[in-house]
Amino acid sequence: MNIHINKTTIQTSHVTGLYNDSSTITHLSKYLSNNITLPFIIFCIGTDRCIGDALGPLTGSILKKTNPFVYIYGTLENPIHALNIDIKLKEARKKHPKSLIIAIDASLGNKDDIGSIIIRKKPLYPGKGVGKVLPPIGDISIVGIVEDADCDITSNIYNIRLHFIMSMAKTIAAIINKWLNIDSFDNPF
Image (cartoon, rainbow, N blue to C red):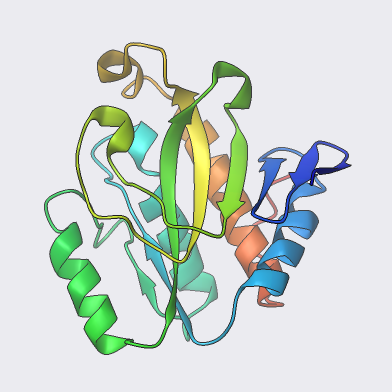
């Protein structure tokens, strides 16, 4: 079942909105309210060594600043990436065995979907777009479509504008902050 509200599409299994549409924050935060139970942790995946893959750590850093009492893994200072993801996931599960995991990561998609933020009631598969086989992460996943999956990703992922990734990170943080009823760190609009 699809429900269209402005440029936001809501389904029972997922919701999608554009990072620069003012209605996205409200609609996606409502989806989180209806689909997340306590306790939870936030697991932000990516690396600060590649702008296109920095969405997770940027979002994690913003959330850590605005939500000091929420368990957030993966920031610019301490990113979670392909080399440490297994260890960090085991640590998080050991520390928070009954917590729902909200996973956040950048993703590749269709050219027309670049700029979309998608929240799903299923795990995400980090590294899949660049041919890596990593464990699925999360009970709820939040992905930002940062580039076309059909492009030459090895060169294009390094040419994505930081402003675009930062704007998406601020929007994702604002969605989570609205869900948690916390004032946003910075209004992305």
